[in-house]
Length: 568
Ligand SMILES: [Fe+2]
Image (cartoon, rainbow, N blue to C red; front, side, top):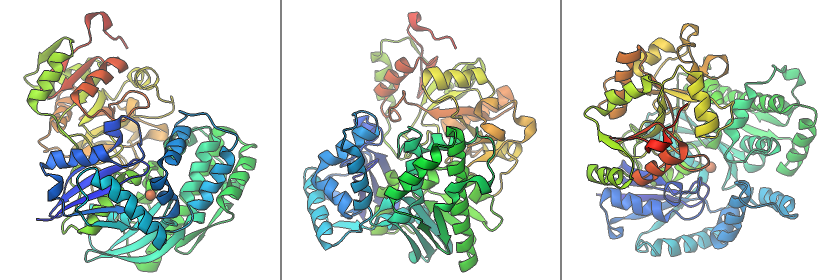
């Protein structure tokens, strides 16, 4: 038996545990510290993985991590610098007059790849952290950042003869990579240098729009939908990066790019600028993928890296005539690196991902205790799926807490807030009052596979289990699903097998019986700005803070205190 612990100690830190090639547990530090996209060493996530698998630290055979570039190494040696950037980025600290200079220095520093000294320093710093958890006996392997992203995509899909493309901000001196996955091996085809990063371009656009980099890029994508169409001839952003066969070339360094973007932004409304940036991004990535397919003759794609959080881009890739299959690793950003590192340390022989409910879970006794301790009215449900579906059909918004917590950025029916999918008033209440999101951010549907085939106009190929791509509703169903639809009939569905034996599948089946549509609005169960809830106590706290109508935990339904009944 081989027990491998993967770790990532940067933006969205986390841990993953593989036992004999099976991914048995994976979680991110934010869920434990309650700071979204937590940075730093993942102490809590590692402990959670060990607890879930009932392993002691002595039973771990190897620890695998990644990224030894100078910027990452400095943050390991000087965690206060990382914390300062985290607080500034999340608007928890005010900028100082030196921040523009620091930012420029950061862009330069992050472009350098690792060397023997930074590898040695990183290894020492990580060993100290591992020793505090009783893991100092383990050999530590440190791997390349983009190779780890590539491993998540390759092993997540687990099919031979696949083109693997990674694109993200920067890591170990690279902003992207292209591999051919064959016989369990990743063979390099091309690299994209850090200075040519398309993700840094999009990050800078996000900052210029006064949104938070590394967090609000999805808002830029959503805002782009509200622009008047702009012809390519009038979009100067397209010229900032060139596609050079299998790589990208930026016209100038990140500092120069920022100045150019600022000049261009001055002449355009926000939504137009967002649309121009989205179009430029799509143009570069689609061209790159077309070139790669033409060059290799391989039509199956697997993608990873933070840039592929952009579901509109993913939808365009999926619909390219040259692409036969397109898999996107669902925890595509740096939060998924721990899985990649573990995969490279001991490559799995079978596809890694069938289910993303890889986090901690509570026992029935713990759920009952939490409900009793809450001081809120509660009742036991004989059939939680059916009774929850009845509440939803009555227009109630419910918190839904079942089984193990999801791994990755999306709620997939383990820690979700649910509503019926047809009502704009429920959508607006959820957006503006309960979750305090921007009005233009659409909500996503979860639907049975059979419904996906019926409702979606552009669904071909394998079902999308993890909400990683944009689809379009057939016109005749757009009114019935108005609450989960973006502009132009778009939606980002989670598809659930009709015959799945989970409580969430049972809920969708009950919705189908009651409403004729096996669909719910599904959004993450977290108060504004906080990570997804992890424990029953956090779920109860979020239930109160968000003012939901009901909370269904396992077989229990909790209602608001009598003086706090919420009317939408
Ligand atoms: Fe990355």
